[in-house]
Image (cartoon, rainbow, N blue to C red; front, side, top):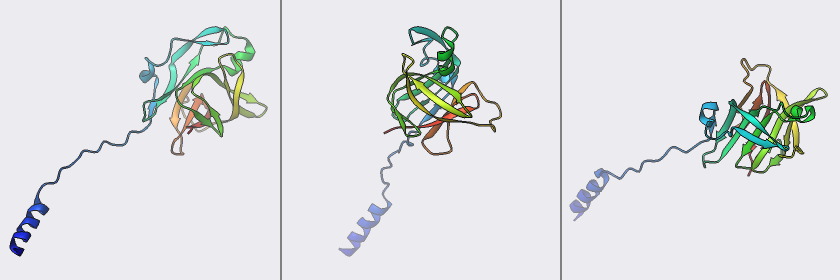
Length: 175
């Protein structure tokens, strides 16, 4: 009987085992203007008016679970100087975001980077032009060819930078 057990053991060891394909873990994708033609609206509503968006100056993220963050510059020429200063772009997010400890709920917002004394500030406004969030922004003097707007991955895992020219703010997806 020990010979029979040996033969069965050898048969089991050498039998092919089923192999299950494992999908690569999905990751967050950086989106560029060409990827956003169906996501960026032609016009957006902000403070009682509509403004045209600049699809060529847009960027975004698609998270592994299919949710988006999209930003685009806007033509703010019909607005007062005070609104124009802060309302440079439109931010649409399907997920909560965190800007240096400041949480932003999913929604549509006006955004901009303004100079405040010697510092740069990132400002988020609701669609009625009320300030919701203000946090420090930075300037990237090493950037060779700044685009008017772009979103790129930061050096920190899971962190991203929203650039308006050379100026940027870092953010993460909030829990």
